Length: 362
Image (cartoon, rainbow, N blue to C red):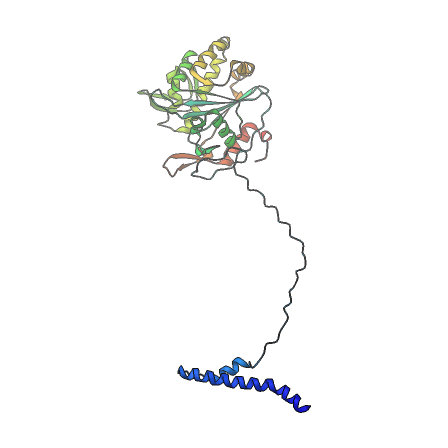
């Protein structure tokens, strides 16, 4: 029984040894025939009996513990610097500034912009050489004149940064209204625009005006050198236009002063006893010399205020963007413009209308 058991257990081993011996002889003949010097025994032994068998380590799959999904933080949507105003449609040479705080006017206040166009019969386009905001307050019996230089480089809503005198030719009164509101916080109720010839005809229709000059000027206009100093000067339409436009010897800032003096002289002449008695006639004459969206009915309620202002010149306050409120700058295209100083202009507006008039604090 033991003998059989030994034969049974030793038979597989004997067969394995015999097979290995036959495999070694076969590999030896093959390697020698190929001219290889590698030990077939070592190779076959390594193939048949590895010196160390790797232990089987079970792979453990970790099931992640459920965790709360983090709530994403809310990122505020970027707000354009121009807010609710129309955005730019073209690139600008400078950064667009934020809008000026809007001014809250009392009921009954009328804000009108006066535009003097340089359009001529032989030219196709025009620009507004004169931009003046007139604010009339019947409750206080006062009026404010605010002159804006034509070369002031501002944001024109719906377009780009450019000279303010390009807003009206580009988009009419609505674009000019948005531009004044964005850069000065003044919402306009109406407008009036005249040309050189229209202005001359209007002044001549009044029979001329008397201008109270507050400065000095010697310059040429119409082939004639004209000199002025502090004092009163009677002018017809052509001379009044020259006085309001000459700038070769001075500049745009001094011209703002003279334009306000001419406007005040026209106003005083209109509200004179003779002018008021002919108000409908004068309106029709002016209406034919300029373009406006104001009707005669819009102006009649202002007659009492006009009489107060005409009787007391201190009731008219004069403001303008002066050299301290802007820097001279040349655009990449070579144009000479004025870069506004926002804080200085805001201070001027606060002086004109009072800090309580602003909808929001600057």
